[in-house]
Length: 256
Image 1 (cartoon, helix red, strand yellow):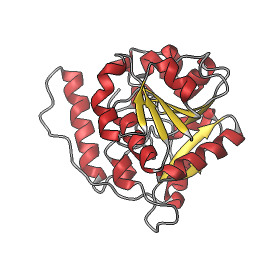
Image 2 (tube, helix red, strand yellow; image 1 turned 135 degrees about the vertical axis):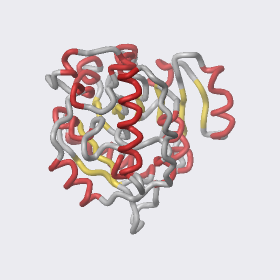
Image 3 (cartoon, helix red, strand yellow; image 1 turned 90 degrees about the vertical axis):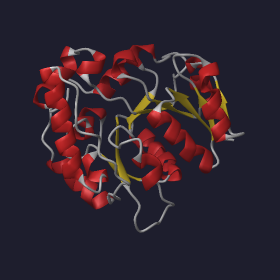
């Protein structure tokens, strides 16, 4: 039986795990706080789920989802992930992760740093550009007319194909953005990041601008976050967004 391991089982990881269980894939969840803290999530997912340590989850998975803060990427168990396909959902926010000069200047991408650390693994950037609430909301069976596409990037073409097959089982089409050096095209605040999956992207843009200004001024945000059921994003539209977006360096973001 195929198994998907999770290093990090927060909002993104737990929602991908639900899709995996629905697709008949066993899941092994882990986080930095210990397996006992995942008991409720495991109970909700049912018999196909169990909790473990990050190293155990890495070794158990036929594929592994890494969904942790960028600041902790060096905590990923490199030896246990050797030879594994790793779906990297990490995003870089200096306000949370601290500044990383190589990312601030655009010298490299988040996933290239992860791949450098996981030298023996096959890293695929995926699931980082969609809000966690839209993962279950927009998943559809293969062939559905309103199926949503997600971008992927990776240095190993065969691994990109394997990742696309897995993500299809989870309910999404994919658009191949090429090697990890191109994964900036769907990092935060680029054209393909989050907004295209919202019914009302203008409301989200206004909210992000408000929060960014509040952070800069040191005052609590007053505007409530928008709620949105999600809008399907077809592959053709996603390809256009990826091709046309300019690179957004940290200093140019509304929210860093």
